[in-house]
Length: 348
Ligand code: KG4
Ligand code: ZN
Image 1: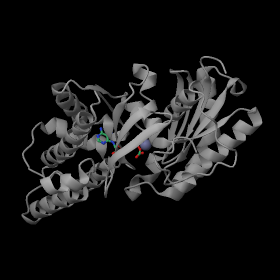
Image 2: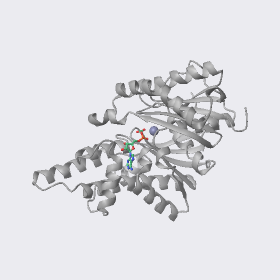
Image 3: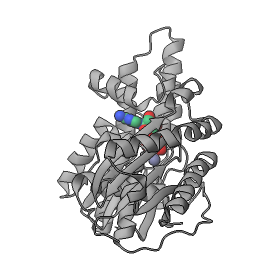
Image 4: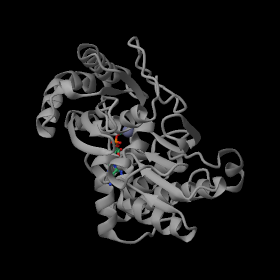
């Protein structure tokens, strides 16, 4: 293998068809086709619709990626693909495409864990990953705190959501407030414009007793219900619902818990680097609060730019390149798609 392996990454675990090309830690191209608009009227991702969209977008997105990077597909040293976790039908499209490419090119295939890929992507922007680090991954499909000793072989889950994912909570509350899907960016903007926190919404799993059992876990369903009750009461009173005010206070409750637990995880493990990832890591308040709190304890925060936080193929390529560099074995060609792949399995 060359020092700087050229790796193709394919991501289809949810509603983004992502194809990325990476040479070592250098990003060559990150081509993404999203089916998000097709799901908007349902208020959430419809698995069947996502799978069909992947099937249609895969080859054009692959061709666009190669063209924009000025790379011939035959030059690729390895193919990496998200094998899980994610929507089964959506994953199958990516895994089948990656197998076809790997077989026809005669190159190794790495079926990788989506969460570890979210962690790896930061290398493309800020240089080699600090290991160990704590990763807070928050998106529409997952909310996890991970201790990463080695992103290619040693990722330990510290906690995760016991109900809704953080992004899901943003999307559901946005819907209550009449904002479009996906709601995260709209809540972020409305909250920023309103500019203050006035409603004391509940912080899930932060009380003394909850902390004993769920120190690093999250729960957002109580918060979501509290927001719904607040909005209903306001509607019953005949007064207009103050969208910015509710958005700001809801967002603060989510970011407060996420950053508290992430910093606590760093301190309890004696780790001084915190990495944020996933679509919700694009949230401006989450970034600011994480930096403010981490800074107090001498913890450094790394957050990839928003385009690399949301699902994309470059993150899969980044992890693939790291696997090649560290000489990890490739996957077998009968590799399955695993919708509930545990984060402790980094390569299937
Ligand atoms: O990682 P991602 O693109 O897809 C997965 O769900 O895996 O994340 C999408 C999620 C959505 O729930 C969206 O509302 C949320 O990320 N999101 C945000 C922001 N931008 C995207 N949430 C809060 N603030 C944002 N600025
Ligand atoms: Zn994701």
